[in-house]
Image 1 (cartoon, rainbow, N blue to C red):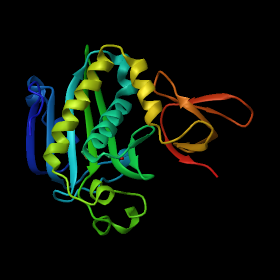
Image 2 (image 1 turned 30 degrees about the vertical axis):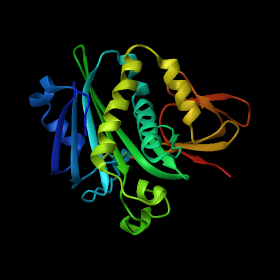
Image 3 (image 1 turned 180 degrees about the vertical axis):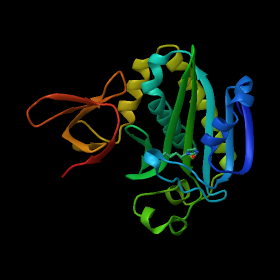
Length: 250
Ligand code: BTN
C-alpha cells in the first residue's frame, strides 16, 4: 500500500505499545518526523485512564503517529482531529457510517470500534505529539475478552468480511495528515463542524460526564470551537467540559 511520501513508516512485529516505542526512541526518531510506528501486536497496549488496549496479533490495527505541532492552541483539538480521520477512513473502507464519541472514541452500531490515545510533550518552542490509534479490524466477537464483548465491534463483525490492515493504515495516514494540515492552517471551524456532524450524541440527549471523582449531568448541546463539550444543566446553566467519560443518562 502507498503511504504518504513525507511520512517515515516503521513496521514492527511486536512492541509493548507503539506510543511507548516512539517515546522511548524519540531522540533517535525526531529527525524522521512525521513518523508512523505500527505493530502486529502489542504486549502492553495502553488505553486512556491507565486501561489496557486489547492488542492480539494481526486482529487489530495498532499505530502511533509521532510529529511536531506548530501551534499549541491546537492541542485541545488533536484527539478530535484523529477521531475524524478514523471515522472518515473507516467509512471509506467499510462503506458504513462511524460516529465520534467525544472525546476519544469511534463507534459503529453504538459499540466501540476504535480508541485514541494522544500524548504531548511541550519543550522549548516545540510541541512533540503522539497520536496513538487502535482499531478493531478482523476480530470475531469471540476473540474479544468476555468483559469487552457487549461494548466492542470490529470491521469484520460489521461488514462480514476481513480487511487488509496495511490498507487501513495507509488510508488512515493520508486522511489523518489531511485533517492535521487543516488544523495547522487554522481551519478549526471546519474541524468542529465535522465533529458535530459525526457526533454519536445528538442535541437534546441527556448525558452524564464522569471526570475524576465528579459527575456532571446535562443536555448535550454541541462540541464547542475549543474542543470542549457543551451541556445545559437542569437549572439552565451552560457547562463546558474538557475531559471525562461520557454516557447517555436515563
Ligand atoms: C482508548 O480507547 O482508551 C485509547 C486506546 C488507544 C490504543 C492505541 S493502540 C496504538 C497505540 N498504542 C497504545 O499503547 N495505545 C494506542
